[in-house]
Length: 351
Image: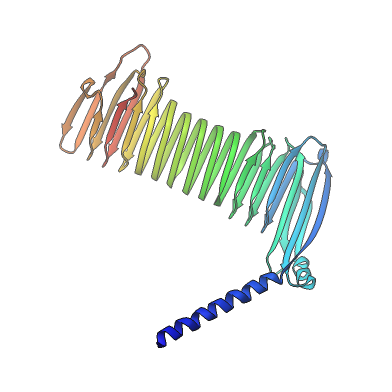
């Protein structure tokens, strides 16, 4: 009975606490402070923006001006409380390296008991240069085709519109990024997910990340603890630890080195060179039926399986299995070299 009373008292306390919190939320009002900046586009090569605690939206347009709308909002009980926050937030504006430079700054030892946001809405010619550094907020880019540098932490990055990005240098942490069309991309990922529809040339480094690439020309990845899913790629090089890799189709060249993980890949009839050097990462490969190739390699502490095993010379010696041979010899033949330790190689021909 005493335990039941204690439970009832605890429930009453929690209910009262939730009621008080709800009342406090109801008493809050949103106060805002807006600023509009207009620059002549001829005066600047682009924009460099450093921001925290807010969203950034950049849209390309055909006008010869750069328009920047800034909204600072604070949730507080009274206007006087919001004003205390406004007084400690500043937007520094200057010209730096031919860029319109803006930075959100805070007063010394600034700490707010109230929720606040600093949002930027930018309109500029699509071919201008863009540098963005944003924390605790999302970035949205629409119809910007010029080169850009993006550093995002605790927020998502999204590319919209029809225009493709010429050059992208990005560092994304604790968030998700989705891009449509990029010429060249160099991206660092940490605790992040990345999606790209199409990229001509890309180099990714990542830790604790997941990448989804639909179509790529040349693709390189270096990192660890990652899941890499690729649709169609011309040339691919992957060097990773604790990586799970899936590639639907390698068109020309592939070089894969994985320690602790898994490789699932398919080669096209146009494949020229393909190399695998794995350790504790099984390799499951599907080869196009029209692919002509020479195959050489060795497996240590693992098995070698091929659905046309009779075409290859297989030598077993203690914990090693060496194999070599040709399949469907023609004038032009791909070169396949595969080594694996502590895991097997399984090859099948596409029907």
